[in-house]
Image (tube, rainbow, N blue to C red):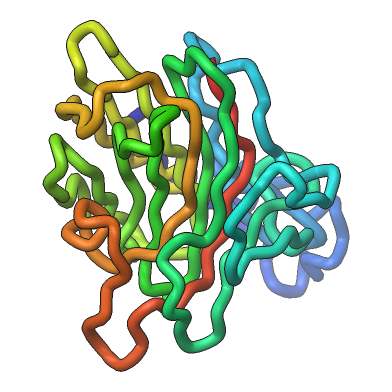
Length: 247
C-alpha cells in the first residue's frame, strides 16, 4: 500500500466568514485521508485488501470475557480502544511487570493464516505474539520493540522496520507454509500505510494451534522467549490487541 497524504483543504473562507462550529463550514472543504468528526479532524483508518483475508473470527473480545484465555497476567478487556467493534484486550502494568506470558488461547486445528491488530503508546516497552503447535513448540513469533516491527526467523530475532510512531493500529498477518517449513510475516501501519513483508524459517514445524501474547522489549528477547530485564522500566506495558482471525 502506498503512503497517503492526510489534509483538509478549505474553500478559503476568512476567519470572519466561518466559525468552524457550523457543519456547513466543514462541508465546504475537501478531506483527504482524514474525516471530520465533531467539528475536528481525525485520521481515516485504511482498510486492508479483502483479497484472501482470513474470515474466521477467533477473538474480537466483544463478549467481554477472557474465558477462552489461560495464564492471563496484566491484561483485561476494555472499551477505550478497538480496531473493530467496541472492545479490545489491553495489556497494562503501570511502570513494569516481571511477567513474560500475558495470555494464551487456542486457535483451533489446521491454521494456515492468522491475522490480528495491535496498537500501543509511547510508554509501552514493547510486546509480541507467539504461535505454538499442539506440543507447545514455538512455530513463529512477531511483535514490536516499540515502535519497531520484529519477528523470529528459525529461532533468531530480527527487526524488519523501525516503525512510524505510536497510537496507530498495526495489522499483523502470518501465512504458514508447512510444506516449505516457512512463514510469511506481513506488517501494515493502517494510518501511515507503511507495509513490510518477509518470509522466514519456522522454528518448530508443527501446525499452529495456539497463540500467546508475550511481554518483550527487543527482537532478541522475543526469539529467546524471555522478558527483557535491561533498563529501569523493563516490562512496562501499554498496548491493545483486537480482532484475531484465521483461515
